[in-house]
Length: 278
Length: 307
Image (cartoon, rainbow over the protein chains, first blue to last red):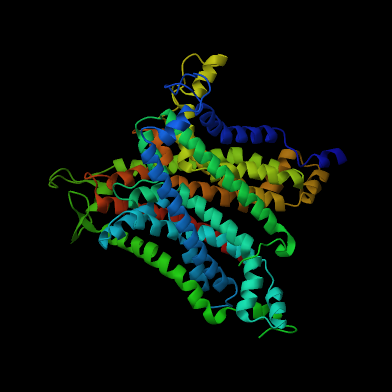
């Protein structure tokens, strides 16, 4: 029986399923990345390796459109991630270090509400709301909508991190005559830093990723990268879209890698590697 | 205030109690004002009269909900007939989301199990590989899938080159393409919760079952699956709920024939042909369906916790 019980962790076919899973996950991305280097006007035939479609993205006919869209996407992601991270950090301190209070379950439900409401419903509701109060749709409406749905994504990693920090650190600091503000600034905040960075990165990428809500609340004449790509793809996939998609793919992979290393740092007990916050 | 002695843990956990209202207020304001109030406004709009150029007239009407269920003819003087167009779209969305969930489960469960039974050192790499696509822009992923499976796309070229097929497969603009797109969009949501519960699973249970001469697949079915069921249910909900209201996969991969709720709603707010109250009503119905699923899940969880 010993042999059989050693095998209980292995099931035939599970490894092939895992491989199939990986192929399904990566094949479309790999194919698009490969064809983005295709030196041919047709997206079907392979015409040799070239960077021409990357040059086209930056200097071609649609370069201005893409540059504006990229600027809007990145600046909105930067502002929305910053605002939602600050809001979420404050909320997590109130929730975790604020003792017990009656509105706590309701507050938590409210924070996770953007995760529960389907994106398209949030999009419709936000569009109707801005139109009802007569707010002109544009950059500001996109930004506000992004801050709202980024809050839970920033909140969850920060809260998880804060929950793992024992109160004894702050108490030790105060025993050593640190003021409350100093205990917060020099002890609690640096300990929270990995969670805050992870929350910020997640919020940033979620904002950059959003299509549906942006598409509803953006109004005419302003585009973000996803809405610009969507508009272009509606008229058929062109080679420059493949190049642009590959660039966005690289940005995403860069982000995951950073967040992977940040969260690994956060795993270390006590977070001694936490960076200085000044 | 710095606790010396016994109650130290408690004093730190309420250190910010005096200012907690100020700390949480920004969240309350942002989500309350820009999500709760808008959903309320949307509810009100679903009971208003449509204006022809998009927008609404402030006059109470049940027309939006009525239109869902009944066809009253052009002038409203014929006897109402049951209108199946929109009910069909909702039913199709449920079926498509369910099939996508099943696909995710079939591929996701073995993957999660395989990863969870790796040595700790390689698990992180496998998990990393599963989560990377989640971080890639959803639109980019959906467009990539469209590029891969389209009629003259790389997949068909490859299959024809290897001689598996002689005619290109028609994948794009079919129900299957939508299921594939939804599967591709939300697969990591299935793998991660199942992984988490298999990782916590105590394989001594399986060994005990094996000692009692249970076969491998019997162990899987009767011991492992019941134990990791919460993870499976969580994964299914995390895939099903966003699939139900998905817009990109049905729109880009499904074409005009394979309409789902997301496209139906989107159409009501595009250009001048839209019908805002109808779109608001459809959104309310979708939201209610999702909340029912989530409430069901929350109840199960609390029953489980109470038991």
